[in-house]
Image 1: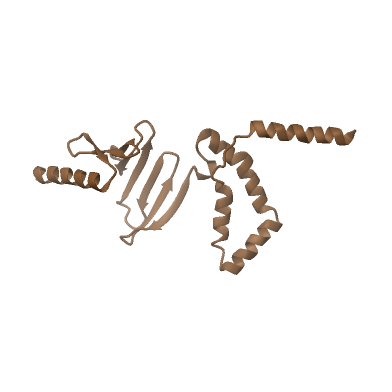
Image 2: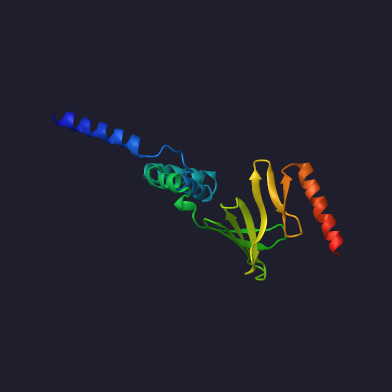
Length: 186
C-alpha cells in the first residue's frame, strides 16, 4: 500500500514539474561561472583535481540544480538572469590604459582607471531598439538604432538620422556623407 502511495506521489510530482517548469534551456550562468573560476585555479592538473573534488562534493550538482530550477526559470520569465544583472570587469585597452566596465540591465559604465577624465555610459533602449552614449554627465547622444536585420539608423551630422545598410558598401557610403559634411563645416 505504501509503495502505491509513494509511486503515485512521485508520478504526480513529475507530472506537475513538467507542466509548471518553463521549457527553456537557459544560460546556466552560475554553473558556467563556477567552471570558469575552476579553469583559473592553476595548471591543468590542479584544475582537474578541483573539478573532481567539486563532483565528489556535490558543488556542481547543486549549482546545476539551482540553475535549472531557479535561475533559468527567472531568466525565462523576466528575460534577465540574476547572475548577470550586474558585473564589473577590468580590461586593458589597446591604448595601454586599464578600464573598469560595469554592466547592468540597461547598459555599461566605462571608466578609465589610469586617467580619471575618461568615463562614459552606454545605454540600450528597447523602445528605440538602439544604443546611446553619454560622456561624463552630458546628455545622451544616439549611436545607432536598429531598423531591421540588415539596416541601422545612424546620426547624419545635421541632427537627423540616416538609414544605412549593414554591408561594406553601406558603411562606405555613410562614411562619404559624414566626411563631406564634416569637410563642409570647416
